[in-house]
Length: 252
Image (cartoon, rainbow, N blue to C red; front, side):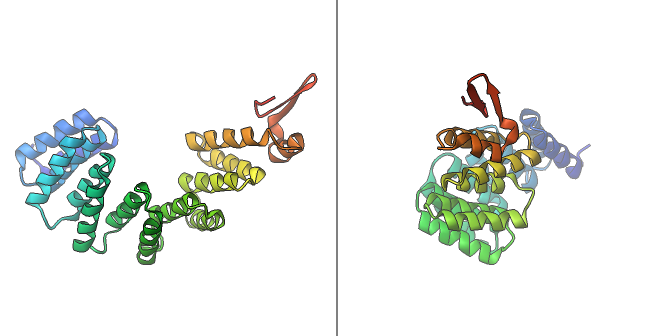
């Protein structure tokens, strides 16, 4: 009883299991034993964030920063909460301040780039992602974020190249694969997009974005001048005949 590692470990496991109310109680118990333990306080703030109790999470992170001003974890947590609250200007300022203090922290850098993207400041977001990749060449979030910005800018060929490079580095990542398929769809390369979605679903059968993206491609392909031939090439199992009606991927 009263062992800090056991108490924090138990609370962390409950958090990872999604049992947030129990995790919160466990962190509160740990803080009662060890009021100056930053791990317990940061874990508690993160649980509050996951529960959607954002004002409480923000207050918790701010209290931690007052106690542990030289630690990066509560600072990035606070910025993330501000971002989720839609307070983008404050989130950007928080990330900028964190980067000034901890220039080598990749979480702060990718968070800042994401805020810029959400604010519609795409050129600045792209520059921020490029800078981050220059420092952390194999960071997945920076690479997928950069590709997403290029896609939003309408620079589809560059976005596709960025996704291709990311998939080559991280072949198991569903976000990069669905992003790549989405770019192919926007470029009108429907057969390739359908194949990319099918490959993603094979690897990640429960990925809702891959399934919905695939359905969107099928819908667009319905209007093709030679739709039957296209669908046979793309997905032989998706074509069947019912009398005089050809049903393709659920679309007559």
